[in-house]
Length: 108
Image (cartoon, rainbow, N blue to C red; front, side):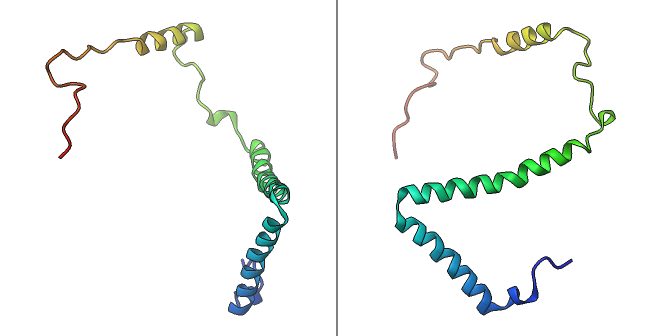
């Protein structure tokens, strides 16, 4: 499937389109910061529209049988959070004084 017409593969046409796009952006920047900001805003939102469309269309293809169970352990969510917090709070032993930990090394 060819998405671009054959004339776009022509080197002079590609060069003219590329230089035209570059000069278009240059002219917008020459108009000032406000114009450049508006241009950046418009192009950003224009790029986000296809992403949102793909995400919304993809929601129609989600099948619940492909998703795993949210909490297979059977414990309450609060107990799971407490367990994760307890595992996170384990303190590591502090380095002893004199074993070289934390000391700066001399530069070569």
